[in-house]
Amino acid sequence: MSALAAPPVKLEMVDLKRQYQRLKPEIDAAMAEVLAQTAFINGPQVKAFATELAAYLRCNHVVPCANGTDALQIVLMALGLEPGDEVIVPAFNYVATAEVIGLLKLKPVFCEVHPELFTLDLASAEAALTGRTRAIMPVHLFGQCAPMEEVLAFARQHNLYVVEDNAQAIGAEVLVQGQWQRAGTVGTAGTTSFFPSKNLGCMGDGGAVYLNDDALAERIRMMANHGQRQKYSYELIGCNSRLDTLQAALLRVKLQHLPQFTQTRQAAASRYDELLQGLPGLHTPVRAAHSTHVFHQYTLRAEGGQRAALQAHLQAAGIPTMIYYPSPLHLQGAFAYLGYGPGSFPVAERLSGEVFSLPIHSEITEEEVAYIATQVRAFFA
Ligand SMILES: Cc1ncc(COP(=O)(O)O)c(C=O)c1O
Image 1 (cartoon, protein in one colour):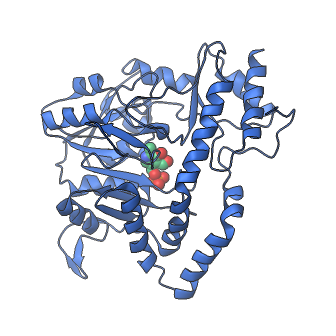
Image 2 (cartoon, rainbow, N blue to C red):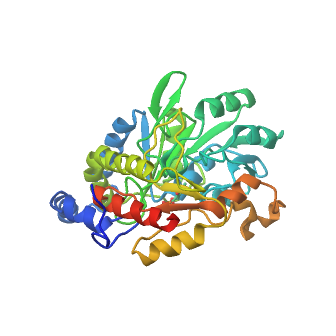
């Protein structure tokens, strides 16, 4: 495939317009059905989606909720942790996990990440362990799983809950004790986000918790519904977190296409890998042996301070890029009270200065990938 001199279309990090145009007949029909039924809250599509997602994930329970941050919060509420209990979470990360830990008056304890895989580093998590540690929250960053076999062994040894933040890796598979299992289903509970740009995204906010344990699933369901099992009988202090029926109807449609979305992302990533080899100081994503990668992001590392110039070069060629994440959490003002500082997590700090992500999504074409890769190579030429 020869690369074009100009972008084939306006390039986006995630092209939701094109995806909607392709799926429009199915999506419009599903939405129209909800509009006609008017059961906007807890309509039949919500339960149907939960059942279908549980089948896809090969797990026993899916509890839909309002967004991925709520999903994390609801799980922590249901685990019955005490104020001051400690939860280990990676420092190079989106804010949601550490934020809900702090919100619930638990203590976020940061750990380092693997310099090439970007997911948590178990040796660092072990070093963070204290007598008050109650849980660990691995985050399956950019579409690839944390080393779950090791995390689960560590958690078993120290009697910790394992809450998997799977907002970025829905559909990935992780190898645990010789068996490939869906990301997010091997810990105490897994959570996800249906934010529009996610691999399985809705047209607004949405999220879910998934797990296998019946009793904990019941508590999580109650937490998301004002602590009720029966209407107007409040057994627990809960919250109100619902996936609305329109979003569930849309997600039922998109779930059927998720394997194809994933395949397109993986094919684009493999092509980027081939086309971007051998450039000085540029590192394409490293694949872990213990996980498949669903490429929520295609995230590279640019060493030697060349990232900003490369991004500017790409922008001039009509290619958007993003930095996930420009500052590690331990250096953010919200977590200053924890007393970390520059140098606390050198890998996380270095990655924040090196990483950048290229466009990848369910609609990206070979021609677009070739154009983007050619422009990256031109920067180094
Ligand atoms: C890793 C991770 N966790 C949690 C969330 C939170 O999801 P939401 O925006 O649906 O609350 C996100 C969303 O960006 C995320 O990427």
